Image 1 (spheres, rainbow, N blue to C red):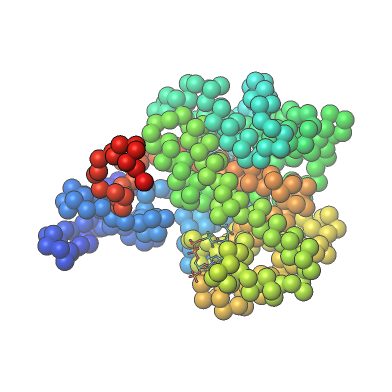
Image 2 (cartoon, rainbow, N blue to C red):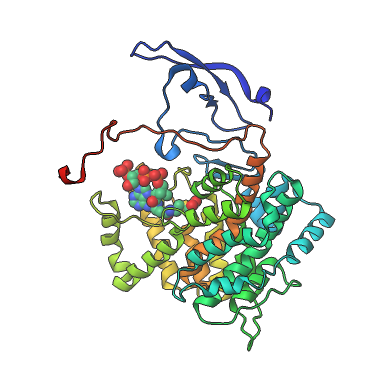
Length: 441
Ligand code: CMC
C-alpha cells in the first residue's frame, strides 16, 4: 500500500492545557484492523514525545505478513486463516507464502523444497564452535551463538540491499535452523551429531537429526511427523511480537540478517514469550507431583492472588482476548499424538484439560479475557514426541525463523524504513558536577 492508499479524510487533533497550540495529525487505515494516527511530526511540531512502554497503543511499522484479530481469535498469514493453512499446507509451503507473499503452485513448491533441502548442512567448523560451550549450557544459549555465528560463514549477507543476498540468507536460515537445533541437543546429551538427510521431508529430517544415532536409525511415525510440522506452522509468525520487533529493531541498523535473527532468538528465550511452553509443562508436572487433581483448587487460588508471582502458564495473551486459534489446533494435534502413542490416559493431558475447564469458568479469567494460548498444549505434544523440555524454546525458534526473516525482508525493502530509535521520558538526575572521591558519601 502506498502512503496515498493509507491516507484517510479524517484527522486527529491533539490539544494541550499547557498553552501549546493544538496540532492535527493525519489518520491512516490498513486493509483491516484499527486505524492509526500518524504522529511522526509530533516532536517537530510540539517538542513533545508520546509515552507508550510495552507498545500498548503503538504501531511500529507497516506490515503485510500476518494479521491477528485478538477479539475474534483470528490469525491470518498473508490473508489465509491459520486453520486452513495448518490443515491443507505443510510448513515449507507456509515458509514460501510468508516470504514471497503468495502460495506456490506445485512446480514452484517442489523447486523450493529441493532448494531448502539442499542447504541443510552447516559448515563443519560449526561443531567446533559448539565445543566451546559447557555441556550443560541451555540449548537456547548455544542456538543464539550459532545463529549469530552464521554471519561469519556468510559475510556477503552484509550486503543487505542485494535481493540475491536476501533470498539466499532466507533459504540458509530456514534450511540450517533444524540442523543447528539438533546439534545443540546432541551436544547437550553427549551424542554425536547426525547429518541431515535431504531426501526426507523438513520435519522428518529434523526428527531424524534429533533422534537417530550412528548405531540406530530413526523411523518416524507419520502422525508424529505431521504433529511436528504443525507445531512449526502454528509458530511460524505472529505479527509484531517481542522477538519479531527485536529482529526489526536490530536489523534496522543494517546489520547482517543472521545477527538480527540471533537477537530474535535471544528475545524469544524469555518465559513471557517463547519460554512459556517449557514453563507451562513444568507447571503441570509440578501440580501432578504435588498431588494432581486434588491440588488444582489450591493452585488456582495461588495464580489469582495478586501477591503471588505465579501465573497460570499457557493462559493469557497481549493480543488475543478470545481463544488463541493455535491453541485449538494444538489441542487437536495433542489428542492425535497421544492416541497414536496409546497415551490417551496421560495424566498431564488430563490435568491440562481439567485446568482449562476450571479456568474458562472462573470469573477471574473470564473478566480478564484470559484464554488458553498456543503454549498450553504444545508442551504436552512435544513431550509426547520425545523432545525434552529444555528444547521446547529452540523448536519455537526454529519455526519462528521464517516469520523473522519475512518481517526483516519486508522492513529493509520498505521505502519508509529508518533505523529504529525510540525516545524516552528521562527521570534521572539533572546535570551536576562530579564531586572529589573523598567528599562522596
Ligand atoms: N495467570 C493469572 N493471571 C493472569 C495471567 C495468567 N496466565 N495472565 C494475565 N493475568 C492477569 C494479570 O495478573 C492482570 O491482572 P490485573 O488486571 O488484576 O492486574 C491481567 O490478567 C492482565 O495481565 P497483563 O500481565 O497486564 O497482560 P499482558 O498483556 O501484559 O501479558 C502475558 C500477556 C502473555 C505475558 C500474560 O498473560 C502471561 O504472563 N501469561 C502467562 C505466560 C504465557 O503463557 N505466555 C505465552 C504467551 S503466548 C506465546 C507467544 O505468542 O509468544
